[in-house]
Amino acid sequence: MIDVLVLDVNETLTDMEPLRDGFAAAGLPRHSLEAWFAATLRDGFALTAVDGYAAFRDLAAGLLEAQLVAAGIEPTEETVGNVLSGFTRLPLHADVAPGLHKIHEAGVRIVTLTNGSAAMSENVFRDGGILPLIEHRLDVSVPQRWKPHADAYRYAAEVCGVPVERMGLAAVHPWDIDGAQRAGLQGFYIDRRTTPYPKVFSAPNHTVADFEALAELLQE
Image 1 (cartoon, rainbow, N blue to C red):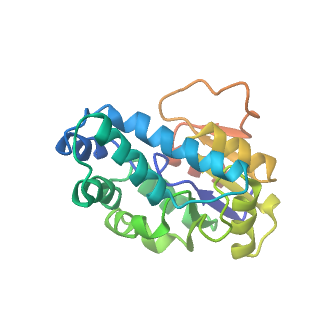
Image 2 (cartoon, rainbow, N blue to C red; image 1 turned 90 degrees about the vertical axis):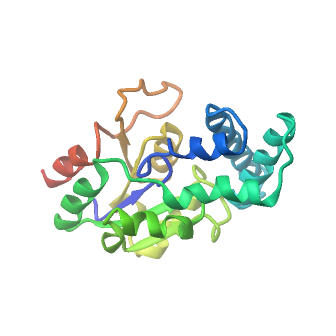
């Protein structure tokens, strides 16, 4: 079906719930995570739309500082750093390791492509037992276009040396699936929570419950 499977990282592979502990330790409500992460994506998308670029960490840090100030908390470098360092300690979703092992055994090449920093996931992948399965860990710092811009996916194709038509993207984010499909990749929507797929985006080529189900699909 495909030669290369491109994986989104945040939320798709990693469970971001533990980040709430960092927000609580900083004095913010645990539910602040959603607004902060959504705002970080929003600003990254907005810069990409006007041919601009900023690193995920820079945007995330600035928005976190704004949240702290709004809550009457001094936004020290230590406080911000402690929250953001949580990305390096996130667990993988339970289906990720067994699913990716089966996909790798089926002969499909595996790479990651994140709007964050590829370096932040190294320990996460090592601790989760999937680091040896990943051929390339990519981020958008080279194309300087955040997903879902087509240049981000084309960059992954260039690194892997395959046409986009021989690649697929697996993600929990409809905007990522839509962007990948518009760039010519196949889209694999990971729907762990049976969330209705927004009708404003192009329908996913394939919908699966998790990575173990995706492995079964790719082995057919």
